[in-house]
Length: 243
Image (cartoon, rainbow, N blue to C red):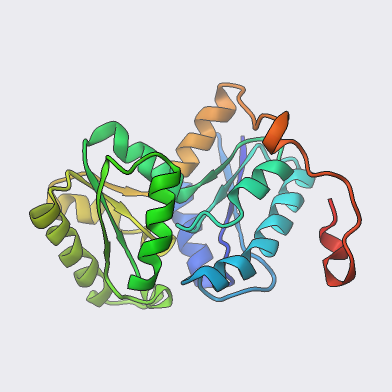
């Protein structure tokens, strides 16, 4: 099985960290390829970043389809371009926020999302609602750690994330933690040991869900909303993105 994991930002260091987490979660007979757009934002920390990242994500999905991958993971907690990617792809496409929330809902009655900047809380809240998790998600907490600081060595980021997780457990009644950034993909095992509760990383969760869907012979439905894009020629700089 071949799975393409797409980091929607252009940080090579984050792509390597995502590749490590995805590879560790994958089965022995699964080949994981991690990639990133050629151009776009170095991190996704708001609606503008997210919108500017989507064309690069879709370009990678198209390339993966041409290369014959079996499924894709969109490795950013905003799940940017997820539905558009599903239109393009034959196999399953799973976003890490959707995957992490669904995994959390299977093992806890209440979970909290611990994310990066406070400005992204609204984005996460909309996904919670869209994915039908309003009754399960008891809090969305922000560490105010910029995404790219997660790449820096040292314990400062870990301490900040762990502290916010503890507040979610003590103050919000969370029974599990969902990590709200692909840049936190190396932390769940350590945090789970420290906190004594399940900590879910969306990269690992999404890889396992794609594996499960492919193994069951389940692909994206191609009737109705997620049918292949209507063939047309885009103009100007968007010509190369024409369906």
